[in-house]
View (cartoon, rainbow, N blue to C red):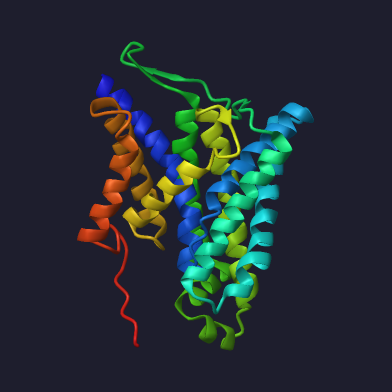
Amino acid sequence: MAFLDYLINGISLGSIYAVIALGYTLVYGIAKMLNFAHGDIIMVGGYAVFTAMVTWGWSTWVAMLFAVVVCTLLGITIEKVAYKPLRKASSLSVLITAIGVSYFLQNLALLIFDEKPKVFTSVVNIPKINLFDGKVVIKGETTAAILVSVVIVVGLSLFINHTQKGRAMLAVSEDKDAAQLMGINVNSTISLTFAIGSGLAAVAGMLLCSSYPTLTNTTGAMPGIKAFVAAVFGGIGSIPGAMIGGILIGVIEILGRAYISPQLADAMVFAVLILVLMIKPTGILGKKINEKV
């Protein structure tokens, strides 16, 4: 029963990683940028919910909506201010800028909320499920994380493949110049991508802080990095791949903590990244792209 309990917890954690990884996948797949400030938008979402519920006394649903709006607007702003001027720049320039944005958000949160950890109030109100006469307990946060991740993956897949805006994203991901010649507004499409990815980061932040109720200015840093590993593992640019990669990374981490060593669990996650890059660099569902030079 212990193994089943660990497996469920791993799937729960992996579902949160999957939601975060979707943000990386969307931005990279369409804008061909790695937004390493994505993890810090998770932290902003957590602080937004905390402030709305604890400081202002708003209801849970209103606070959740507020967090999504804040992170969505933040994502659009970051894209316009930090990344749009670097569309033609090298990948190294974009990477350095992303790291700068990440440190800016972390230190801004430190100035506003100080370094003292905040106790996060869970936004999940789902009863726990008892299995095998109470030997295995599935918490409401676990159920919520799994359901939310599945709904988001299905919804995103339908949106991208069956809506005009989604098809515009696919066109931009293939060739920005050709898409622009076909009448697609590339700038607004990329902004929409950042908006969706940042909104998902807010959702992930709420799920993460509900499951692990301690909020600091670095809350999203390590989960963000692990979610990036999940995105690469599943095949960055692939929505189903982000889901599969996230769940596998979550299960590997939890089982590693339980059966090998809590200190080595994080190292195991990054060892997986190294192995994937050595054996199948495109990830599980990633596609090899041939480029003319």
